[in-house]
Image (cartoon, rainbow, N blue to C red):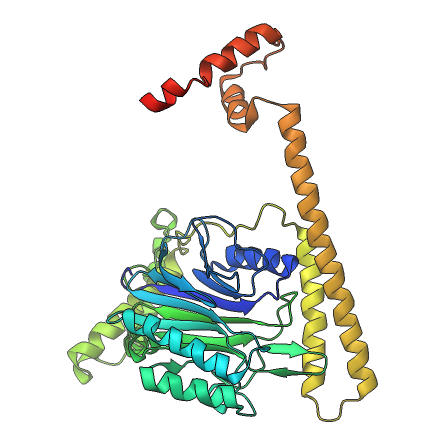
Length: 413
């Protein structure tokens, strides 16, 4: 991995729901997620950005334009392992319908996958349907105790924070989605949280966390000294500098500071950096970051964003009601009904938007067989579109000349 960078990771379970997977892809693009682990995906497309297990139970996906690509290490039933820079990511899923003996065999098969990744650092993410207090569950079942002991034996530490349910249903919730990591990379994981008030169109919620290329201790020292790292150092628009404002800010900072003789060299350097930043902020505006603008999937629209906001609001109201001790069943049922209606409307709108975008794409192909790149060149050169068509015999001869079907030509190639 490059130095001094942060990457946001996401894990969830889409319950084999097409619309939940569609929404996940929008979130990846909108939130600039580096990697996502998806348990029970609706479909694992044959694309270089998707890596699935052998049974279609779990997948790891990166945005197509990701600066940190993945490469497949190995996969089996219920697990897939990929190389992500200097880290090995393992996505896992185990069905709640399988028994304890089958779970034990699954872990026995997963253990050598983790061990073969050594000496690389490992992050294991997924839905194992095992409950344990070690990762925030209110109860510890037999699978949870087995998983806890297995992880400790091979050197994995649970990274879950808090006790928020990762799976929420009408009758209750549970913590079954777990993040494990080896201690080295675990020290670089921060901001682990369950996004309780974000709609997923699934029973499972999104889990989002950050992986840094520097340990958290280094991050804390960086924050304390005011540094931002080589990739995130602030920049200003020098062409818009106001010398008078900068001079006034420098005078104010000079008056406010203690005499330099009372502090050490390190403290002077920190103060100088802080004062210089304050002067620059006062004298000229910040330059925009070099990030690409946030983009969505091709079918996303403002109407869908509004429906998502409404669904998020309904989920937030239902979640808060579940936490109250003085809630009534009638109120909880009403809020759950409103949440279900909002989810249904949002899901239907996603399907309609995808169908409409696909139909529009087909219509553009029928309307202009020359294609969008040709239209762009034609517009730049101010050339009128072609108005004549080829005779069928001429067109047939051209096609046969461009795409010969002779086996000899293919053998020569």
